Image (cartoon, rainbow, N blue to C red):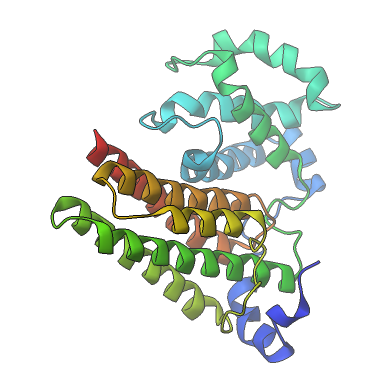
Length: 278
């Protein structure tokens, strides 16, 4: 359970309106899902909502491979969300049926079943959840946000160390841009959700992930550009892992939209470091 220090009553009042407005956008009750099963118009509406969600989120799923477009994964997500309505029972009992259906419904996708089965499962689970964007209390939501606030700040500090030891040129310029991006993300979280000042140990990521970052920071030394790229990419991958974990939580849409945009920016940054290495 998150520490109550993360948000006092006045803090909660300041953020309540920002966090509440999106709670109904994607609320999907069992009644709505049952209606979708027998009503083509409702089903079509659900298809649009699910398609839009996965179009925006497929980059952040564990099955995603950099460079593959949404068109390669979309048939799998569609298979999953439609099967969640069509078939009773649990997913384990239906997966063999869906695997057999994949060659016929994959369309232009070039991916094999083993490459998309996790996407099918993710879409099934999201469709089966009664409230896919709810579930955390107000205090818990704010704890998640403050954890990301802290880790953005920590990642910025790691890049400051790397910048000091990097030679002038493209690497240093790129790290500077990334540093400013993490500082801006931290500032946006503070501004949008009126987050309080950070204290040592705050945040839902203040355990092994932050200890791992501290170890990484201490390892950065005036070595080669390759070593600096390795350390910087590792730090940013830690941050992306944290965003992916946060986006799996029951966040209201107001928070989810911001975190998704920030997570995609982190991913683009990692790809830029990878490009510079090659």
